[in-house]
Amino acid sequence: MRIIISAAALLMLFGCATNSGIVDLGGGQYVYEKEDMMAYNGSSTKVEILKEAAAFCAKQGKQMVVQSSSAKPYTPYSSYAGAEVQFSCK
Image (cartoon, rainbow, N blue to C red; front, side, top):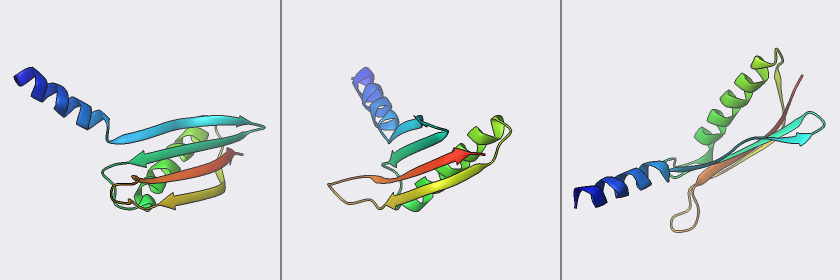
């Protein structure tokens, strides 16, 4: 019984967010999409993405330039809060 409860707890913990990671679109363009089950609005998720994207560019000795961004709120029984940012490093 303890194993089942522990396994369920781990699944809940790891199932809290979906994350595309930084995807190279080619031509120096990148996109990063993330959904978070624990967030109420997409704005906090977008801030996380922007921080990670800025760190990604900084590792290359460049600055992040946002091309476009969007955020969506949590919708009960439908979708998690999430955000998407398209950016380049210059």
